[in-house]
Image (spheres, rainbow, N blue to C red):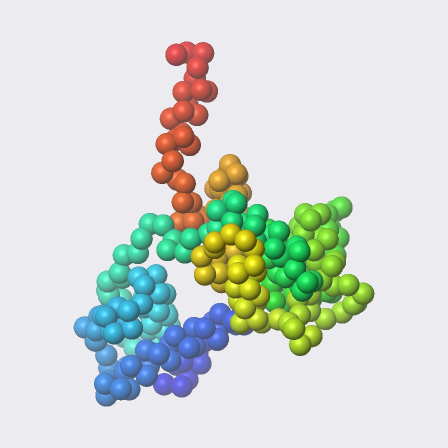
Length: 287
């Protein structure tokens, strides 16, 4: 069993490997608690696991799908390696999730209020944290892992070298306001993390969440409970609201599938943006 798990996890690295390991362990522990051999389970057993995630753990459909995909990937790897002849998870039904993301981003006015509160904060890392998440669209692990040495210039643009999912490295251009916020956070330092916590050490996701909740309390506007991913969500929805094309937003957000970006588009049902109007205006001379 340990060899099969290691072979599956070897396909991943970094934080992806850490999270997939944790989610696979959940399934293996579930099997152990029910005296099931993971190599002897049937499709019905995997269906029971899905039902357990839904009813006992009360996970959202998106979470259930993610955890089921880990199980499916594990058994697919076992078939490839000759450990099993058939995957018991091959025909397991996935729960259907909502067409829109359940996470709500901030509105334009809410985001402006948060930016103002972060800019005026006595903690010089608050503004850099908010703009890196909300104006660059970085994932929280990307923002907290960013180092001063990752700043540079490329073809006349100031950029930040970001190591994203799967170890993919991209150069993210820094608008002037973002560059100034990062410079304020860096100060006179020449090395080390860009974002520091109150103890002068590298900020982690928990410290970042605490800072965002503090800013939400002092910004002067009622905000929903803030967490780092909400600002990445705001990054996508604000660009879509501003009229940036779906393809460009997908590239900026580094989504592998455009359907992921579409789930963020809370205004896609707005009839003012219906393509019928674009077509009619384009063909105005003939109508």
